Amino acid sequence: MQGKVITVLARPNLALVKYWGKREKGKDCKYTSLNLPQNSSLSITLDAGEELLTRTSVVFSEKLAQDTFYLNGKKQDMKSPELKERFLAIEELRKLSGVGTRALIVSNNSFPTASGLASSASGLAALTFAASKALGLKIDSNKLSEITRIGSGSACRSLFGGFVVWNRGKLPDGSDSVARQVFDEYYWPELTTLICMTTREKKKISSRAGMRQTVATSELYKLRPDIAEEHVKEIIKALNKKDFEALARVTMADAMNMHSVMLDTRPPIIYLNDVSKEVIYAVEDLNESEKRLVAAYTFDAGPNACVICAESDADKVFAKLKGVRGIEKILKAKIGSSPKVLSDSESLINPKTLEPKFALEK
Ligand code: PMV
Image: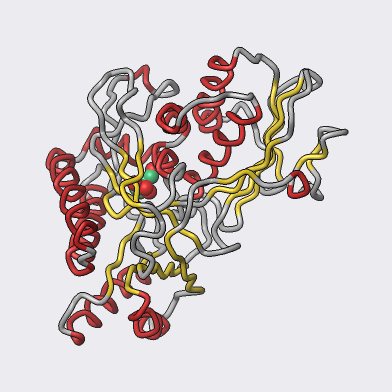
C-alpha cells in the first residue's frame, strides 16, 4: 500500500515552568522510557513567523525497505540510541493503526537543532502529528499527546497552541500524563517573547542525559518537583488575572530553580554562559530602574535567553538587550498555534520517486 504524503508545520514551545526529570528509575528504562515527568510543566507555544518552525513530511509505503529519516538535509543514523528512543513514538502509532509498512520522513528546522531552542519539541510534534495523519489514524489530542511524549517529553506541549499545561499524572502507564491547552493563542496577545541567540552550538549534554544525571545525583532535586508543581498553580493564577508581574516573578524563579539543580548535579551541568549571565543582569537592572517587573528571563537546556514582556514594553526591553555584548540575534515571537497540515505543494517528499525534494547534504 502506498500511503499519502502528509506535510505538517509545528512550532516550538517555551516552558515557563520547566520539565527536568523523569519519574522512572532503574537500569532497564534506558531505551524504553515513557518519559513520565517528576512534575507538571507549563509552556507557551512560540510563533516567530518563518524563523522558528519545523516542517516535516511523512509517507508510509510498502515500496520502502526501511525507515529513513532526513533532518535538515542529512540522512540520520537510524541505529543511534537517541533516534531509536524517539522512534518509539512512531512504533506506537504503527501499532495503533495496524499498518506495518516503513516510513520516509523528511524534516527541516528553521533554527539550530539541539542548541537549547526546543527543536526536539517542534520536531517530534510535527513528526507524530504528520505520521498519525499519514497512517489514517483518528485519535484524539489526548492520545496523540501521550504518544508524542514518548518521543520527547516537551513535544507533547507543542501539539497545542497558546498556554499549555503538561500534567504530571499518576498512572504507571502514563495515560494521564498528557498536555492540554489552558488558554488559546488569542487569550493574551500582548505577551511577547524576545529570543536572544547567544550560540548556535549544539549543547554538550542532551537534556535526556542531563535530567537522568540530575535525578540520580542532586540532593537539591528532592525539593524541585513540589516547587515546580506550586509554580504551575501560581502561573495559572497569574494567567487568569493577566497579571504580568506575577507571571514574570514565577517564570524567573522557576528557570533559576531548574538551573540550580543542574548545578547541583554530579558532575555539574552548566548550560548558561557569560552572555546568559549578562542577560540576567540587564533584565534585573531594567526591572529595578522601572520600579516594576517589565520583563522576565528564562533559559532551557542551553545558553540562549528567552525574555518575556508585554508588547507595549518590547521596544524598551529590546533596546536593553541590544546593549548585551555577545547576543548575535534577537528574534521576536508571539504566542503560537497548534501544528497544521500544509498543502501538497509544500511537501518535502516527491510522492512518485519517494525521495526528498531538496538537494541533499553529502
Ligand atoms: O523534552 P526534552 O527532553 O527536550 O526536555 C526539555 C527540557 C527543558 O527544555 C529544559 C524544559 C522544558 O520543559 O521544556
